[in-house]
Length: 121
Image 1: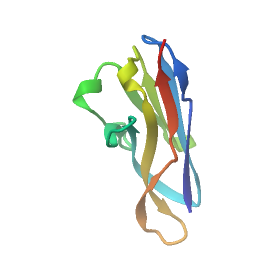
Image 2 (image 1 turned 45 degrees about the vertical axis):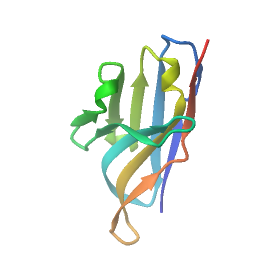
Image 3 (image 1 turned 30 degrees about the vertical axis):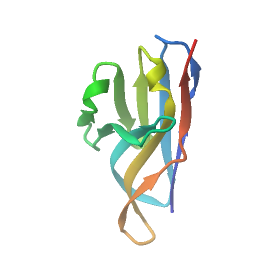
């Protein structure tokens, strides 16, 4: 019904930057909040940031100032700008979205499969 696909991950040196993208596609009627999570090796998945349709944002306290979430509603896309990356930012980054399909008008939370970010020299 609704698919989320992340892109933009890769290998970056400490202090570098990356921009992740996540695009929703399929039989979409509407999308509400969109979010980024990450899961580091051997750790639980954690929330990174979220953004509403109107652009209101919430960040994990530890990541404020380095990461920026934004979205393009016309493109059903959410972005995550990662700056001043550190080795501890190495993780698979997942997006999710609360979306309503035109097939049943039920709001569900959908997940992408993730994109790997590796911060290493």
